[in-house]
Image (cartoon, rainbow, N blue to C red):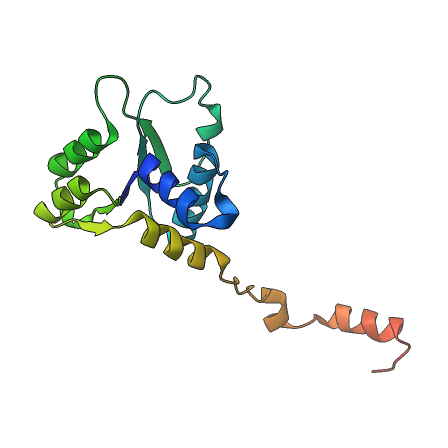
Length: 158
Protein backbone atom coordinates (compact mmCIF):
# COMPACT_ATOMS: atom_id res chain seq x y z
CA UNK A 1 0.00 0.00 0.00
CA UNK A 2 1.17 3.50 -0.85
CA UNK A 3 1.09 6.30 1.71
CA UNK A 4 1.63 9.58 -0.09
CA UNK A 5 2.65 12.99 1.23
CA UNK A 6 0.16 14.98 -0.85
CA UNK A 7 1.61 18.48 -0.82
CA UNK A 8 5.16 17.15 -1.16
CA UNK A 9 4.17 15.26 -4.32
CA UNK A 10 2.13 18.20 -5.63
CA UNK A 11 5.09 20.55 -5.13
CA UNK A 12 7.41 18.09 -6.94
CA UNK A 13 5.01 17.80 -9.86
CA UNK A 14 4.79 21.58 -10.21
CA UNK A 15 8.58 21.82 -10.08
CA UNK A 16 9.59 19.00 -12.47
CA UNK A 17 6.79 18.53 -14.99
CA UNK A 18 6.11 21.45 -17.34
CA UNK A 19 2.78 20.05 -18.51
CA UNK A 20 1.40 19.96 -14.97
CA UNK A 21 2.34 23.35 -13.45
CA UNK A 22 -1.26 24.15 -12.61
CA UNK A 23 -2.48 20.70 -11.54
CA UNK A 24 -4.82 20.81 -8.54
CA UNK A 25 -4.91 18.46 -5.59
CA UNK A 26 -8.11 16.87 -6.94
CA UNK A 27 -6.56 16.30 -10.38
CA UNK A 28 -3.46 14.81 -8.75
CA UNK A 29 -5.60 12.39 -6.75
CA UNK A 30 -7.53 11.31 -9.84
CA UNK A 31 -4.27 10.60 -11.71
CA UNK A 32 -2.92 8.61 -8.77
CA UNK A 33 -6.22 6.72 -8.55
CA UNK A 34 -5.96 5.78 -12.23
CA UNK A 35 -2.41 4.54 -11.69
CA UNK A 36 -3.36 2.51 -8.62
CA UNK A 37 -6.32 0.95 -10.41
CA UNK A 38 -4.14 0.10 -13.42
CA UNK A 39 -1.50 -1.56 -11.23
CA UNK A 40 -3.99 -3.23 -8.87
CA UNK A 41 -2.68 -1.42 -5.80
CA UNK A 42 -4.21 0.81 -3.14
CA UNK A 43 -3.10 3.91 -1.34
CA UNK A 44 -3.73 6.81 0.95
CA UNK A 45 -2.79 10.42 0.33
CA UNK A 46 -2.55 12.91 3.15
CA UNK A 47 -2.59 16.69 2.72
CA UNK A 48 -1.80 19.36 5.32
CA UNK A 49 -4.61 21.40 6.83
CA UNK A 50 -8.33 20.83 6.59
CA UNK A 51 -8.63 20.93 2.81
CA UNK A 52 -11.30 22.68 0.80
CA UNK A 53 -14.72 23.30 2.27
CA UNK A 54 -16.29 21.23 -0.52
CA UNK A 55 -14.47 17.89 -0.67
CA UNK A 56 -16.85 16.32 -3.19
CA UNK A 57 -14.14 16.52 -5.88
CA UNK A 58 -12.31 13.79 -4.00
CA UNK A 59 -15.29 11.41 -4.07
CA UNK A 60 -15.21 8.25 -6.17
CA UNK A 61 -11.44 8.09 -6.74
CA UNK A 62 -10.47 4.49 -7.42
CA UNK A 63 -8.13 2.71 -5.01
CA UNK A 64 -7.15 5.93 -3.19
CA UNK A 65 -8.32 7.31 0.14
CA UNK A 66 -7.83 11.05 0.64
CA UNK A 67 -7.14 12.48 4.11
CA UNK A 68 -6.38 15.91 5.51
CA UNK A 69 -4.13 16.20 8.57
CA UNK A 70 -6.41 18.78 10.15
CA UNK A 71 -5.57 21.56 12.56
CA UNK A 72 -2.90 21.14 15.22
CA UNK A 73 -0.87 18.54 13.32
CA UNK A 74 0.82 18.08 9.97
CA UNK A 75 1.06 15.49 7.23
CA UNK A 76 4.50 14.29 8.30
CA UNK A 77 3.27 13.47 11.80
CA UNK A 78 0.18 11.68 10.46
CA UNK A 79 2.29 9.59 8.07
CA UNK A 80 4.86 8.80 10.77
CA UNK A 81 2.03 7.61 13.03
CA UNK A 82 0.69 5.41 10.22
CA UNK A 83 4.14 3.87 9.67
CA UNK A 84 4.55 3.17 13.40
CA UNK A 85 1.03 1.75 13.79
CA UNK A 86 1.18 -0.51 10.73
CA UNK A 87 1.44 -4.22 11.53
CA UNK A 88 3.18 -5.01 8.21
CA UNK A 89 5.41 -2.00 7.49
CA UNK A 90 7.47 -3.87 4.89
CA UNK A 91 4.41 -3.74 2.63
CA UNK A 92 4.23 0.05 2.82
CA UNK A 93 5.56 2.36 0.13
CA UNK A 94 6.04 5.85 1.50
CA UNK A 95 6.02 8.56 -1.19
CA UNK A 96 7.79 11.71 -0.05
CA UNK A 97 11.06 13.52 -0.62
CA UNK A 98 10.98 14.68 3.00
CA UNK A 99 14.00 13.34 4.93
CA UNK A 100 11.99 12.91 8.10
CA UNK A 101 9.51 10.55 6.43
CA UNK A 102 12.17 8.67 4.48
CA UNK A 103 14.05 8.07 7.75
CA UNK A 104 10.86 6.89 9.49
CA UNK A 105 10.18 4.50 6.60
CA UNK A 106 13.70 3.06 6.73
CA UNK A 107 13.46 2.58 10.50
CA UNK A 108 10.45 0.26 10.02
CA UNK A 109 11.86 -1.29 6.80
CA UNK A 110 9.12 0.25 4.65
CA UNK A 111 9.96 1.24 1.08
CA UNK A 112 10.68 4.93 0.60
CA UNK A 113 10.16 6.54 -2.80
CA UNK A 114 11.05 10.13 -3.62
CA UNK A 115 8.12 12.12 -4.99
CA UNK A 116 9.82 12.88 -8.32
CA UNK A 117 10.66 9.20 -8.92
CA UNK A 118 7.10 8.13 -8.06
CA UNK A 119 5.61 10.74 -10.42
CA UNK A 120 7.94 9.78 -13.29
CA UNK A 121 7.23 6.07 -12.86
CA UNK A 122 3.50 6.72 -12.63
CA UNK A 123 3.53 8.79 -15.83
CA UNK A 124 5.44 6.04 -17.69
CA UNK A 125 2.95 3.40 -16.56
CA UNK A 126 -0.07 5.52 -17.48
CA UNK A 127 1.30 6.42 -20.92
CA UNK A 128 1.90 2.82 -21.98
CA UNK A 129 -0.41 1.64 -24.69
CA UNK A 130 -2.86 -0.93 -23.46
CA UNK A 131 -3.10 -4.04 -25.58
CA UNK A 132 -6.68 -4.61 -26.60
CA UNK A 133 -8.00 -8.05 -25.87
CA UNK A 134 -9.16 -10.13 -28.80
CA UNK A 135 -12.91 -10.69 -28.83
CA UNK A 136 -13.87 -14.28 -28.01
CA UNK A 137 -15.98 -14.42 -31.20
CA UNK A 138 -12.80 -14.08 -33.24
CA UNK A 139 -11.50 -17.38 -31.87
CA UNK A 140 -14.87 -19.14 -32.22
CA UNK A 141 -15.43 -18.12 -35.79
CA UNK A 142 -18.76 -17.71 -37.52
CA UNK A 143 -21.71 -20.00 -37.02
CA UNK A 144 -23.21 -21.83 -40.01
CA UNK A 145 -26.09 -19.37 -40.25
CA UNK A 146 -23.71 -16.35 -40.09
CA UNK A 147 -21.53 -17.89 -42.80
CA UNK A 148 -24.58 -18.43 -45.06
CA UNK A 149 -25.73 -14.87 -44.41
CA UNK A 150 -22.35 -13.38 -45.45
CA UNK A 151 -22.15 -15.60 -48.51
CA UNK A 152 -25.61 -14.38 -49.53
CA UNK A 153 -24.62 -10.74 -48.95
CA UNK A 154 -21.58 -11.08 -51.23
CA UNK A 155 -23.40 -13.21 -53.73
CA UNK A 156 -21.17 -16.24 -53.26
CA UNK A 157 -22.19 -19.86 -53.23
CA UNK A 158 -21.13 -22.43 -50.71
